[in-house]
Length: 339
Image (cartoon, rainbow, N blue to C red; front, side):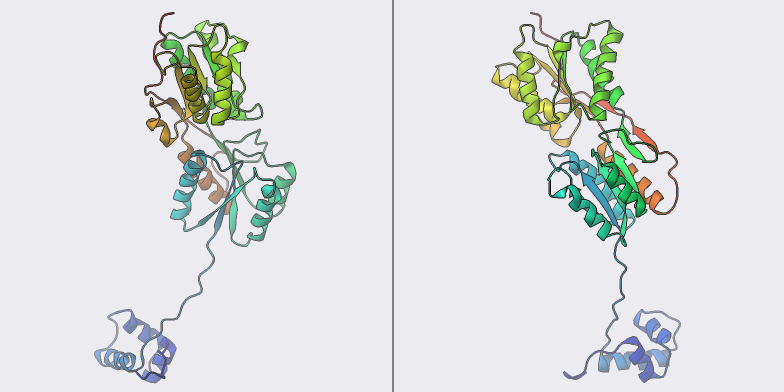
């Protein structure tokens, strides 16, 4: 092989050897269905001229678009893990957008529409898509699945959520069984379905236990650490403060920890705290947080499977999937100390 020459393709080798391209391909790939003479001739040509493998044009990978209300904390990471797991099995890529930034409000949708030839569909996470945005997706026949929907999904839009009502019931019942009666709750935003369901579960547990609900122990939060701390400070400075706080997500529970520390209270000796989500860092909180596990990764995987079914022209067996929550007992809850 000279410096001026360039490696030959299978077609060029076949022409020189006087055989078919299929025969040369068999030699190149080590197949056995070739006579020794022909194999030797082709291999000699390869030694003399070299062989250039032709690159096949690969089809662009399909894209699963994941749209978050906000990319903050560990919550999105757990969702992405679930989407990635299913996408990887089907050799798909994952695109991620955020709605919270003003410049992203329409930008994400324009990107989805631009990528439509390869786009599989959209998974919207804890997001409130406008009716106009949903209509644009529907007109382009782009499937949409909601995960942990922030508001009513409406008819015809598949969704995956957790057992929020039962989780609120279980969390409150745990505190009641420990002997607490002054149990406060820090909710999420009023618009969030999950927040309202967890609050309803809390109220149901109190009612079933015959404990009067005190409106002064219900404080609206925003699912953020700072909001949880501000709400907890209000609660703990009441003339008759709570002995336990149900923070309706883990971030707010960490905010309660900070408020308790600021006021010189110990968790759980002076104040029991329970969260909701069971994000991975919560096991390393001090003390480790008792919380309600929301199966975020499994929810995202289920939503991705639904999306692929829709993209393939099928109908999911269920348009509404609700996965069970589970109480995870750690060290942040205990019986109330006697006053």
